[in-house]
Image (cartoon, rainbow, N blue to C red):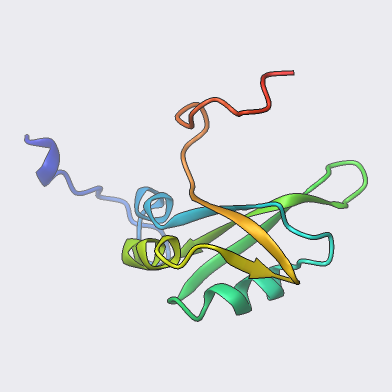
Length: 113
């Protein structure tokens, strides 16, 4: 079977697969502490339908960690978002990138620790 003709046989409840969601996912970094899921949804809905927004939080304190992931229904929306950089949310310019699976992203400019 050719890889380009492969169709997953078990779509999620929404009718799309996780692979498709990962293709239409962005990373948003440098968020102000006031940024919420609602704030991000409001900003990015102007580009296309938003499936989910997840502001990453510290496991112990619950405080925001300054970055989030936004998933759109279509990959074309990610292209539109990326073509409209820079983005300003809560009076702060944020870093927007296409999300990549763990281990697939290029090394951080901040080093490993």
